[in-house]
Image 1 (spheres, one colour):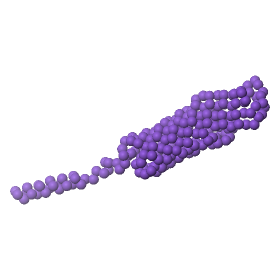
Image 2 (cartoon, one colour; image 1 turned 30 degrees about the vertical axis):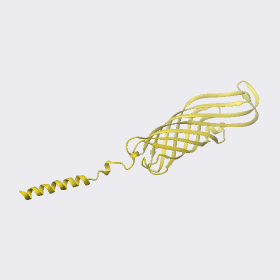
Image 3 (cartoon, one colour; image 1 turned 120 degrees about the vertical axis):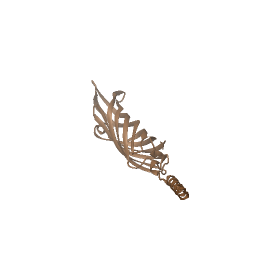
Image 4 (cartoon, helix red, strand yellow; image 1 turned 60 degrees about the vertical axis):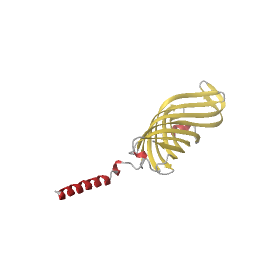
Length: 217
């Protein structure tokens, strides 16, 4: 009987020891960014290279482009977000004789184009949510407010409206270390706005930008 009690006690101790040493690491994430939804914001400045119909109107690179973005990040690498900003380009042409409506005028042309996008985005990151280096691909869709204003001296030919837009992109986020919040973000984005007026038969451009990004949970 005494031997039976000792055997039961040993079995109980063995079971307790096994429970204490049970490896449940697979239930725990090594990164606070790997549990549930986390968040990110970015602010970037860049240049825009006009293409297609936009280049037919203004054929010089725009130095005035600001992009703002907010994201909801998931542990599987996907993220959804919203993106907006401000894009402006201008070009002066030599004096020439042109037809403006019913008038023939001799004037210096000042061509301007302002674009304010409003896009929903979907992105996939190739590394986990807490990684120090996060390359990604992204697609955006929505619309953009476009203001076409062509000045002929004191006369103006203007068209402003909201048009549909799409914007695929590739980018790279680099943080100060694993699970660090602050980092840099560089992006190359093709933006196509379905705006048509005069020379502008759609308004595509290539935007190259860099700035700061911050992630938090």
